[in-house]
Image (cartoon, rainbow, N blue to C red; front, top):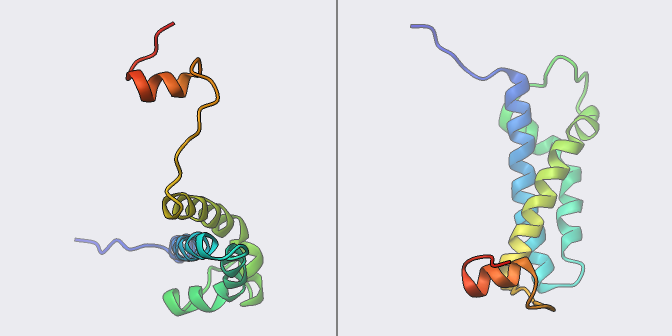
Length: 117
């Protein structure tokens, strides 16, 4: 049976997404405690090249040197960071929606369990 593994490109992407998840959780938790805590996760972005190289030990062929990791990984990292920052912050502050109208769809669903029109 043939050993099927991940390619270097897939390992690179997964490590970038993992770093986005980690920094997003750190950002959200820090932002719930300190006003500008989310900046901690942004600062951690600048060590993504060290994290990626620690996990995969090699770079994809289209990345010539370590300095290109920051540019190549930005959007993948950013989207995961943003999502997990908002998610962990919302959980940490125990967000409760405020209804300004009892005619809103969300109000009807949460109070009646159904939408009546």
